[in-house]
Length: 315
Image (cartoon, rainbow, N blue to C red):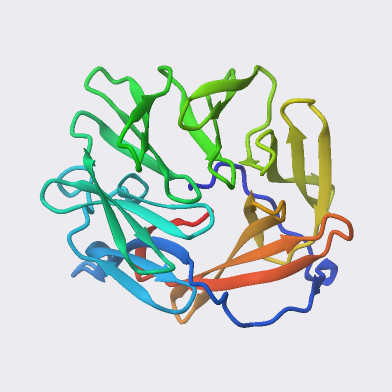
């Protein structure tokens, strides 16, 4: 899914603490990010080229030959043509001449087509959001009347649920059983599949939806003088109970988003940039937050080189 929260700020390196961890990648490969390559131009710039690709935690790069790359002629919006599930286990894209929805599984390397769902020609697409487990896909775009439309497809049945006009899909719970959506005034929690409303709130916090289906988490920073404080905020949408977990980051590191897993673990994704020989290196790191000690344990870290054009993260 796409990052939905404001980046957290940077703190001094001396304040950073993590617990020791193994350097090995997870035994079961996951998708770190998806995107397009870029090729140099005569004027010194770069342009998108090649097929859509998936970069995996085991070092493999999988080219999705035949996958749709553009939302219109020469209009590249990667987030509108491919989505990676929050846990990195699946990717969704549209393949072939007919643009059939396809779900790719990282664990097996196999692709599953959903023949009843094809590229929505009636929308100017701008975002896809894939649920953990890969069952539900939100397709958001603008119709001919300039209204934003968000349709959620059940990839096992092909059935489509259209959100109320003006609503956007924000997030799914780790088990895919709840979906959070809304507009700038209201947040709504749906039971996926039946699409019954479980909760509606006019006062809410946007963030990653937890395994209880009501608690969200998001990073935030505050600055007082020269002091910067990074925290992960939590809020129970049912009870309005709030929480705050201080976290300490490396100098130059920015928190992008938080995520929960099914077991209730809370992770934070960060990014830091540096120039190496004229090449911009974007390092992304996943940390697990110990909510009791506030320490961070590194789960995975990877560099996205500048040769990668537009990309979407598993977040």
